[in-house]
Amino acid sequence: MNHEPSYLITSRLSKSKGLFLAIIYFLFISALLAQKKSYSFEDIDNKNEFGRFRYIEVKGHTGYHLYAGELLLDEVSSGYGAVEIRYGWQPKDPDHWTSRYGYASYGIGYYSGFIGNPRVLGKPNALFGFISFPLTSDIKRNIFEISQSAGITYNLEPFNSTSNPVNDAIGSTVAVYFNLSIGGYFKWTRELDLLYGIDFTHFSNGRITTPNYGYNMYGLNLGLRYHYNADQRYVNSDPYTMDLLQARFNRPASEKSPRLHESSIEIYLSGGSVQNEEDKGTYKRYGIFSGALDYRFKFNTKHAVTAGLDLFYDASLEPQYPETRDQFLYGIHGGYDFMFGPMSIRFQMGTYLTDDKGKSPTYLRVGFRYDINDWLFTQIAVKTRKTSRADWVELGFGLRPFKW
Image (cartoon, rainbow, N blue to C red; front, side, top):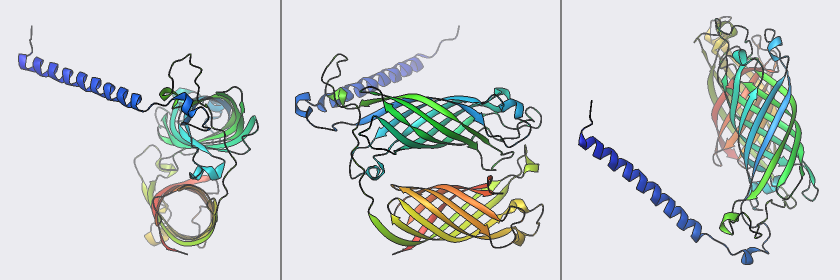
């Protein structure tokens, strides 16, 4: 029988004791802080909107596929089903940017879906962030809203020439997750809302790998949302107490968006890599580059328009255009930005000024932009070819050297 040396046993006991003491210390400090941060219900009973408003929601999804390929018709014919869980923050500060959007709420979520035969399509899960914009006044019991989610889908079953040759929709185990829901909620009780809506869900890897038809699904959703006040435990944590804080935020009228009439010149540079359809299932890849020179005009803190010039380099054109100079394309575009806080949803439509090299005369750029500071921003976007199919994913940075 083998025995550990006594000094190893002593060392392990010492480490376990140290970890145990650290946990006890953490719990002790947390208890002290919780006791220090306490409120008398009598002192705050008449204070409207006191506390931190949070919510948890669970939604079920069902619907059908919008499939553009040919080999998966039987696999996707029965539609799809999914469940998602969300945790949300409800801002209440009138000086916060959300006050100009009906006091929009935002948070994080988890998605788990059944989209067809799991041996062919996988069992997709997703982690995402979301933002929900109310469309009607809070004085009504039924509220309409629009919600957008974006994140990462994983656990997909990709194309494989040997083990999964029929999957002509996606070529990787990981993809971008996108969901757009239009619907509403009915204030059922003090804490509960009944959720309903129609939505569109998209999984795609933007031709980073091929095949890349992606998964496009549309359908209905139904769920429940539970509101609570995160500061209730600092007032009275007794489950039978009648000293209850307000559970949900009573949204006032939206603050007006100040007019800006601001102009700026911006330079945007991005890169990435793509794969041609004939290279699916291999490691062969090609580099891409996008550059843009833009004029941007902000009407206010919500809406802006853009116009500018594009320079593209696409090394995946090499099989048809072996000369490097022939792999450049030039274009012109115009677009619209919907801005909220430091973020923007960007939509641009462009046309090539030279030969489109078989891509089609027009293209779209749809993306998400985040302003790091007043002169620097980062952006992720999908550029299309043949209008609706992904040409590549752009990830890059931009500068704003001039503003007036």
